[in-house]
Length: 338
Image (cartoon, rainbow, N blue to C red):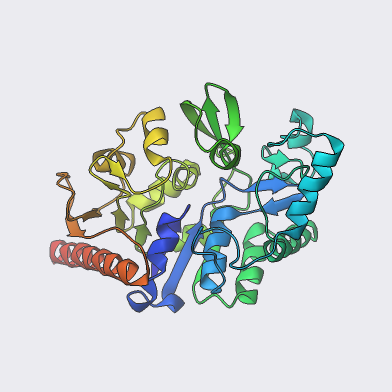
């Protein structure tokens, strides 16, 4: 059994080639829900849905977002109506009172659907309608995710990190904004001053997540702050990671990040934007997979390979390096026990 912590595109790209290395039937993927957003009354779970759509064979792998060849007629009509009404484009964050009204799971991340600032495809939207409706019928986010996973015929077990709301809030020189506003609408342009995981202190990891963390864990090359950070902010998660073998794949080659705003966000929360910074952020990681060009010296075992992932063959190569690192940890633990 093995568990992957998945957020953003890094870990899903690793999963693209992991099936030939780790048996999907014995694999659990814990998805980040810190960057979920309620848009026009629908709960959108970007990181969970990337795994859901990829496992279902429908992911748009050019963008690593949404469903391939999806139409966007509803989104286009929303923009036409907003333009006709004279509304300014951009995110329309609901007021403070609305943020904590209604369904609890959507707290602190509610946006109006007027001039929808995230492009949601029509088939993609059907997933969000189904998810939100099932939540309103009384199901938990974990239960809903498993229903959707069955509909997409996922081979792995996919669970969200929590059934409680946690919102990744980016504090910038232009004010506080939800991660999706920062990343999608603002293109990560504002200077970042801090990152807050609102609600994490009161939230709890689901029992399914805690059960999964009892198995060996793989932290893929995801953003350590906004993809993995919300999980680590949940009470009990980091403690659980200290008690199980953990292998992490660095999203950096020394101080060069593969993609996304990880460098900017790491510096904002006090870590060096580098592999060394990732190691500091992950004190629970027992071993690392680093790129062959990454000469960073760590105080933990390292397996090196070409960690750039541009397709399934690359992903399989990195997954085999992860498996090697896990095997070495297991062998070492066995030798110490003997």
